[in-house]
Image 1 (cartoon, rainbow, N blue to C red):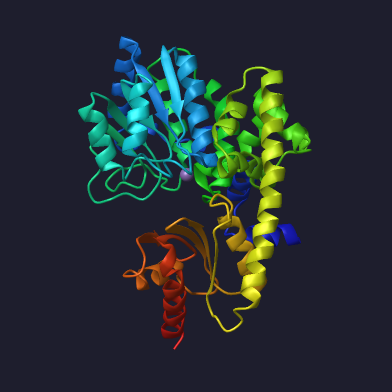
Image 2: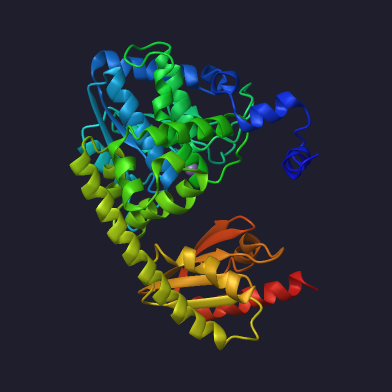
Length: 422
Ligand SMILES: [Mn+2]
């Protein structure tokens, strides 16, 4: 066996057919029936009604790359299907934060929406969806995040994480779920003939790689063929962004998505508004695309220098906390959109769990990254009586607390660490 064959065998790819499928995934053969996803029938029926009546649809996205890619997928496809009026709303990290909010629903109403289609969010937005429907706005949820016991009160909630369906693959990203909606609509509306949906795979690949879902099953085929689409440079925005990022289109790979295009797109939402990244994705001509891409490049350069500054300041604090097992660093001058990245860099340097907290007046928000088998979410829970809110999972968590309680919080998570390691 060659080394390459050994690596494939270690992944359980022992038959010739399995290896072939892994190395050259076949889009058509791994494509699952979109109508097997929960509520897909209802979602398609509601959208066909909107199509027939010429209703105004607002796509409610997210500021991360998966959410932006998913938004661009639906804008592009809905245009081809001939939906009359389609707009997009991307929440602002600093105003609305992740998910739907009442204020955002008001803004969407002011856009004249009859129907909201969420992408990459919505599964836990029960109250906001209820509010929208009290204003006469229906909601169709498409999402891939974890769900509550009761589904949201939307017309449809398409999400492979809901139990009790026969869809064979659960780990789609938001862009992947939006793409399934397109595949479903394709069978019942004109405008995007069978096969032409593959031109959307560049966007699906971007969301799939940057959301770090498993590269198996449909995800693998979508990324593989999405990279082929990207090489053909049909989308002016991604063509311009590749050029600004110094990526040669014919050599583009998944790493370029995660470390080249992704950070540039994210920089917009971290510093100002993710709208710039959506403008890039949806640009219809070369000039518009270049302007949007140059804006992203400029913001990314700025993001890097802000990040370096925060990192230096945080290191100065950390160097005075050598006895702490869990680092809790804080300042009033740190950009909330960038501290998460700095937390990861601090973990690398100090090899300890890190909480990095940005103060905004009386209130402070922080971002945690774990080290070893320490659970960031459990630590936040152990400080339940100190904080305002918080949560997450083992590897990463978020927390909101009163600025004056930061010292108490630091003490508590360190005590928690000791109890954990006894
Ligand atoms: Mn996502």
